[in-house]
Image 1 (spheres, rainbow, N blue to C red):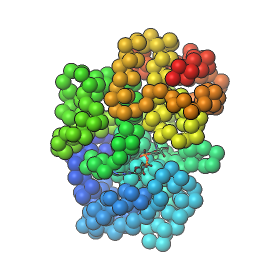
Image 2 (tube, rainbow, N blue to C red):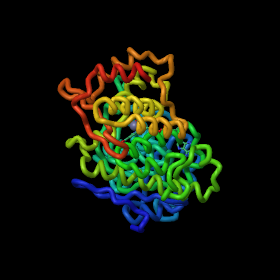
Image 3 (cartoon, rainbow, N blue to C red):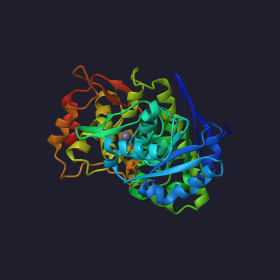
Image 4 (cartoon, rainbow, N blue to C red):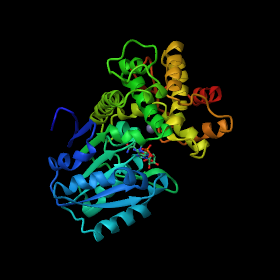
Length: 379
Ligand SMILES: NC(=O)c1ccc[n+]([C@@H]2O[C@H](COP(=O)([O-])OP(=O)(O)OC[C@H]3O[C@@H](n4cnc5c(N)ncnc54)[C@H](O)[C@@H]3O)[C@@H](O)[C@H]2O)c1
Ligand SMILES: [Zn+2]
C-alpha cells in the first residue's frame, strides 16, 4: 500500500483508508491489490450513481472485474430490511457469489446498508467503502458498524463488518451541497474537541497560521472561494487527520466494550434527543452541533471547562454555518424526555461525555438529569 494509506487495525482486523484526489478512476486497480474475484456489486443511491458510477464501473472493467450497479433511492428510508432483500435478489440475479465483493459508493446511508449486505450475503463477502460525503469520509465509513433501521428506531439491526478498504476521493465532494458538507464538519469539530486541540485552533478563524494549508482558519464560504487545488489539498489533510482520530479510538475499542468509543458520543446525548423532539426534520450534524453546546455548558459545571473555551466552540460551529441554538418550534420538554430514553443510560446511571479542556474528553457519571434539563432550557 502506498504512503497515502492510514492503517486501521485492532483485535482481528486490519485495513487501510486511502485519501487523495482522482482515486475514483483508480479504484479498480487499488481494490485489486487487496481483493480477487471477477465480479462485484456496486451499491449506490440515485445521486452517487448518476455522478460517479460510470467512472467507477469503468475502472473495475479495466481490471477484468465485472461490476453490477445496484441503485437505491437516496435518503434514510432506504436503510431498510426490504431494501436489503431487493439488493440481495439483484445480486443473485447478476451472478454475484461468495468469491465476489460489494462496493458501497455514496454517503453514510449507502455505506451502512451496503456493508450490512456484504456482512450477510452468502454468510459474508468483503466490502469496499467509497464514501462520497464528508460525513462518510470522516465518520461512517470507519469502524465497521453496519446497519439498517426498523420502524421502532434507527440502526436497530446491524453487524460489525470491517471494510477491506476505504477509498476517499476528495474530488467527489465538489458536488456536495453546503448543508451536507456542514454535517461532516459537525463531526470534525467533535473530533477536535475530544482529541485534537491543534486541529481545533487550526480550524478556528483568527488562529495561528494553519499547519494544514487551506484547511485552517477559514469558513465554509472562504473555502468555497479557494482555488480548487488548494481546497483539495486542505481537505485531504483534514480528512486524513480525522480518519486517524476515529481509527485510533475504534482500534482501541472496536466493539464498544471498554468505554473508549463512547467518547465519539460527545454532543450526541442531547443531539439525539433533539433529533427525536424535532421528529428528524433537523439533520443529524445540526442536532449534534446544538448538542455540543449543551455538552460544553454541562462540562463547565461538571468538568472545569472554561467559559472562554465554550465561547470558542460556539464561534467555530458558527464559522461552519452550524446551528448553536435550539429553534423555538422544538419542544424542550420532548427533548428532555427523549434523553431519558437514550441508550447511553447504563443501569439507570447517566454516562455523559464531558470535556475538561479542548482536545480532551471523558465519560462522567456525575452529570444529573437536572443538569441536562437546565442545559436544554438554556439552548
Ligand atoms: N456506521 C457508522 O458508524 C455511522 C456513523 C455515522 C453515521 N452513520 C449513518 O450515516 C448516514 C448519514 O450519512 P450521510 O450524511 O452521508 O447521508 P446520505 O448518505 O443520506 O447522503 C446525504 C445526501 O448527499 C447525497 N450525496 C452523496 N454524495 C454526494 C456527492 N458527492 N455530491 C452530491 N450529493 C451527494 C446523497 O444522495 C444524499 O442525498 C445515517 O444513516 C447514519 O445513521 C453511520
Ligand atoms: Zn454523529
